[in-house]
Amino acid sequence: MKNKLINKIESYDNLDLQTKKAETDGDIMDIAAKDVVTAPQSSSIIEIANLMSKNDFRRIPITDPGSGKLLGIVTTMDILDFFGGGKKYNIITDKHKGNFLSAINAPIKEIMTVGVKTMTNTDTIVDTTTLMLEEGIGGLPIINNDEKIVGIVTEGDIVKKLGKLCADLEVQDIMATNVITTTPGTPIECIAKIMVRNSLRRVPIVGEDQESQSKEEKLLGFVTASDILKYIGDHKLFAKLFSNEGEDVVKVTADQLMIKDVITVSKYDKLGYVADLMFESNIRGLPVVDEDSGKIIGIVTIRDLIKAVVQ
Image 1 (cartoon, helix red, strand yellow):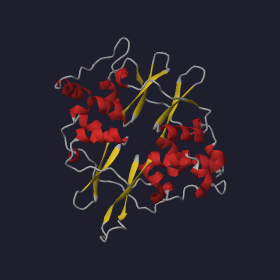
Image 2: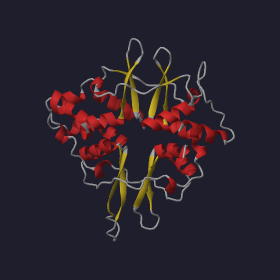
Image 3: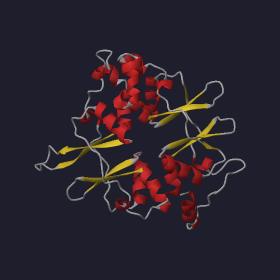
Image 4: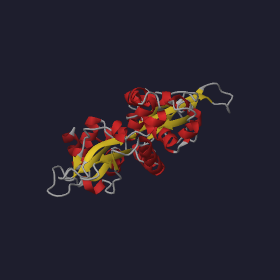
């Protein structure tokens, strides 16, 4: 994969990228975010959810306050897993005996991901892209020789740099067609499970359009992992917390959270246009809709664009 990417890069002008580690900073630092927000492992789960929601973060590195060394990372999927989507929900049911209020105030170290894949400040964009694709990772912390974080790089950063390598392809060349959808009445607990179990960050909501005489199923909205996280982080869950049990919180349904003004693309759109649309709208996944019927026929994500770079 790495050699294929190098060969493709060399066939384009104005992509002067390194292919070997640098003695000081590699070209990965040219595209990385350097002002990285981190948190200690003593931070509570709800504090991290709030921090991610308010700043629209998809991941937060967890570091040791004394040494500054990386200890782990928390992503939106870790929060969703805990919130009812996966194995980390057992922390609520087992460790906290079903006491949801106690569980969300537990330290973040209980749900953070450890053994984090990282890059170093001397690494290349090519190596970073390769690791992201091989591991299916959306963001990588960058550390120096002292194991302290000096940056973070995401799928979006890679696409901004290398997107011209796939700009002329069409959406239909790379879109996923086996789209998992759900209906407006689905509780967010179930949506979280769909996301975690299928490694999805977004789920289209489909059903009958009540404003149309047609009874055909159409795209009505979209729920993303960030939407659910914002619901948690906005303290709306406390308004729903009529007991210490989490059941009262997770019964809110998709139609109460979903984005209704959905930005869509067609299967004939060029990937260069799609990438620009993603960055302008701060969206990392777009539904592909049939222009005649309005039905969803696929989905294209920022990760699909990275895969297309080496296609």
